[in-house]
Length: 123
Image (cartoon, rainbow, N blue to C red; front, top):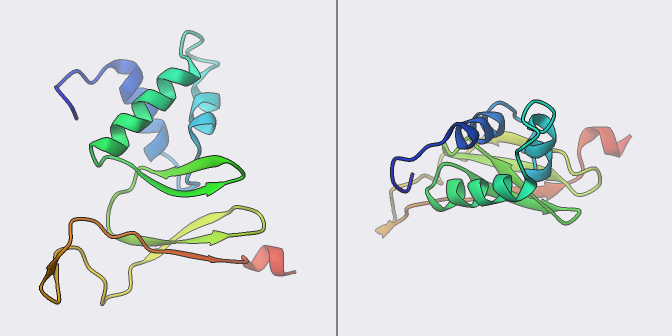
């Protein structure tokens, strides 16, 4: 992180983001914390999430219904995104796509997102 000032609110926001596999929005993170931390503002959540993304501690997965959806898991994996309900699931990264040196091209990040319709929406 930029500097070493990892405040208690920043830690709460980060741990909440990382505690779920639902790929939440900043608003969802705020909603989870606001009852126990009434002095926390939505702006503070947005600013901290921007910092997490800038420092590689979180990534934006997709924009669903106008809300950026996030992932605190920055390990190499891909995402399935349902265009109907907005559900996002993690899946293993195809073995031919890796972070590092690929065909002489040095990569520092990989983002793979599959868009489609989930099994629940197909019913």
